[in-house]
Amino acid sequence: MKKVMATGVFDILHLGHIHYLEESRKQGDYLLVVVASDKTAERNGKKPIFSEKTRTRMVNSLKVVDEAITGGSGNIYDTVEMLRPDVITLGFDQRFDEEQIIKECSIRGLNVEVYRCSPLVTDEPLATRKIRERIIERL
Image (cartoon, rainbow, N blue to C red; front, side, top):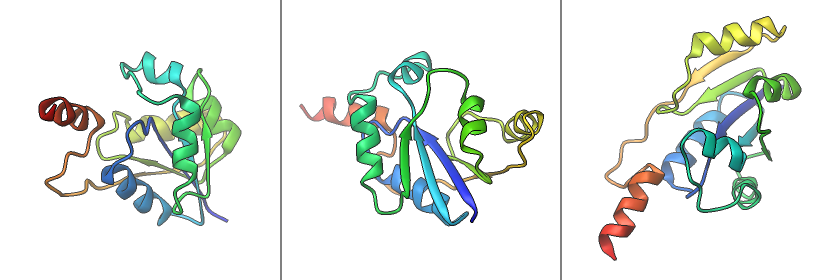
């Protein structure tokens, strides 16, 4: 079984998230999604509207997802080491370096593929920040 790991905050679910998860699912047999903890999201400059528990529950309810868990508050590689995925997928706009991920995993004895998902082309806002801006603009 080929296990795929996708990660993100997933605060306000939108079509960009769905596209990312659907494309991730196509990379293997089992899609495991790691939802950023509140602490991790905040450390990375995000201020989620929904709690980590709610965000994880929302992602877990998507039929494309086999399992969603809340990530730890430490190093992402601790989570990768624990879950041992075969493939790590990245959203087209996630600020991760594919080569660095492969290198860090290799140091931990993990042989992983890294797949960068394509963007979804649409006129709808596909970033939580842009959705928030649209809501404020229309108030």
